[in-house]
Length: 163
Image: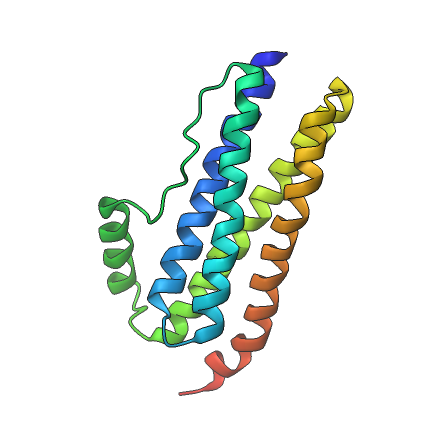
């Protein structure tokens, strides 16, 4: 059972790292949009903190995780993404913003589900420390998800109908 819990913690740690990196990359890419830039950075810090907390708690389940979150995606991932954007015709900054917000929403939704799995596991194991961690971090993930959703709603119509 410990191995399964350790795997869940490891997967959530990876997913939070990915979400933090995505938020930072999107915020950097859309510097001219102050809400995206500043809120994206603030929301990324939440995920970075979650990474640190998961690394601490992972030790209880014999999982050795890096406590430092990745700041930005790797160079190779960035090159791949740029290539995909060029091939996909996403050179229009407004369409790129829409794509970026959708990706943040998808990643945050996955992270939210992982927190839910971990919370249910903590309850079953009566691990109050792990349960407290999920009750602290999961609401922040839900706020990240709501922000991405609200940003999509606020921008989608204008982006899609503007020539």
